[in-house]
Image 1 (cartoon, helix red, strand yellow):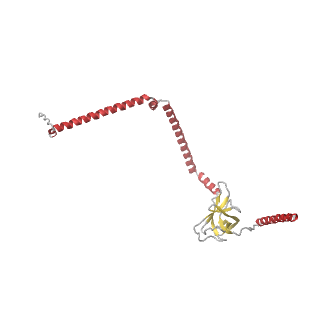
Image 2 (cartoon, helix red, strand yellow; image 1 turned 90 degrees about the vertical axis):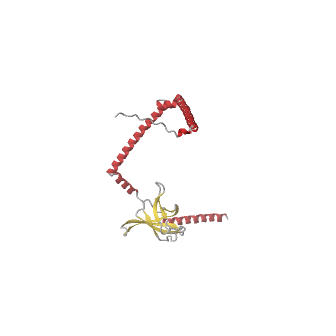
Image 3 (cartoon, rainbow, N blue to C red; image 1 turned 45 degrees about the vertical axis):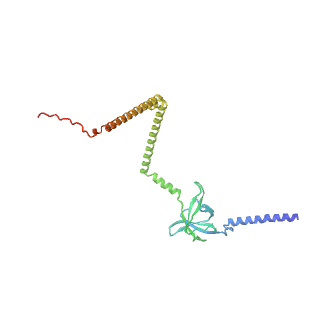
Length: 258
């Protein structure tokens, strides 16, 4: 009985080893025995710099497959060399026929992957063996060459030089203005100058308040006197209304000798 248990354990171990070895053999030979739920879609690019075999394929940011094969060929229509990628996609993922594929990068220095930019024709999804247009990435070398050409232009160099010089002058002026402002604030804090004395000396506040109070008293007295005069004039007209109809006497004109 004990011997049978040992033989069973050895048999199970050998079986697992054979299965693992078979999977490795199929994998090395390029035969995917677990791809029954996958279908193939092709994409053509002018350049796929950084994309390799088994690079992931994403739809809406979700990994739905991988690159299974890369083939370089000459396209007589476009009259240039291009790259054809074979993409293995899960059958549960329905990609509209008007979608397109572009090369993206994970992070600033991350690996490249393919992003399926989904279209709107959801009623007509791509089928096994169909092709989708590929959008090639902008190569950093071309960006560097374009930037070098722009910076190398003499007019651009002169403009940049003038801009930097003007920026330096503006910075110097701001620094001088800041130093002057700090000096003024320091003098005010020390009580120097008119503003400093006004802030530090309470007597100026007292004198100013006294002047305002005197002015307010005089203004009140003036208003009272004016009101009293107006009332006396109104009372006089009420008592002698004929004064409203009386014309003021005319001055006699002096005769001039001719």
